[in-house]
Image (cartoon, rainbow, N blue to C red; front, side):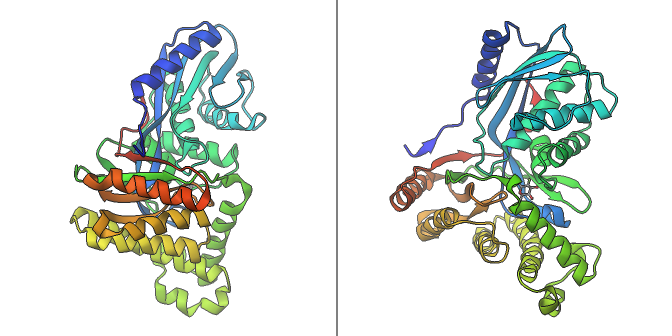
Length: 391
Ligand code: GAF
């Protein structure tokens, strides 16, 4: 069996409650879950007014919590050291680094005038860290949802996503777009989240065909967006748009990029070509999906990967290898399309395939990837799942 199972949400909730009891002698009064995400297509264009097509996966960050009588937030996790936060102070970034996602979300509530009660919390997660599946957005959205429960308030979903994005910007120092937080906040079972990043409007698009399976292959090559590569790419796109002289990438055509090629210079011209091409591909892919036109979808995913590899330069040899193996299996072997997913520089690929052949495809991906790299990848099937919610 090459396919990993996704731990049931109820088991995660039980684990979080048990660990809260063992570590803080407290019973959970609030339990929140928020998922990671996979992006089918539309990569590195959420901060360029583009379209993106992610979905919430059935892998969750779960937080069990209850208020205490103190002015402290005491938070334990299975993946890092525990932290105690002084809630009398407006939160600022600090150490340990992982807790900046928590501090940033608390600060978002404080800035909205909320008085955060003392609380004990325990965090468990089935979203792999550093795998390009947005464990950070899941943590932010789970924390925001737990605070909604503790404060007995409900934020509008859009506001919750934006609050979490600001936490990522100001506390994790990653100048991300809106894709991850919106996918985690707005996700629904059997729905992709098509986001028009110019208007900030998410549209839920049906994805219900039981004959289709989405495989996620974690290359186990780690991914760290805060090390500068992500910010550098974003800056390239801002420079490119300024040189082309348009207000939005949505007003830029392939001919505009071609005409400005020398003025843009390398690598900004290639970054620009990626942005314009990826916006087009994402629009075409969502039409192809709606029409069940898989013959069109596969080449669009392949072109997206090639562009991220050559023009945007956010892939790596392990991601390329995983995608190449999927392409080699090909349509005859049940593969519809494959590409890297998420920010890149390591992380995971997404392979859309026929359900009846998914197990065999996963076995081939795992065996060939391990034979070439010596690394055993984690491969699991995922379906669009429910976004952040209280359990
Ligand atoms: C990361 C970011 F957080 C997203 O906003 C998006 O830009 C993605 O990389 C690339 O598509 O996940």
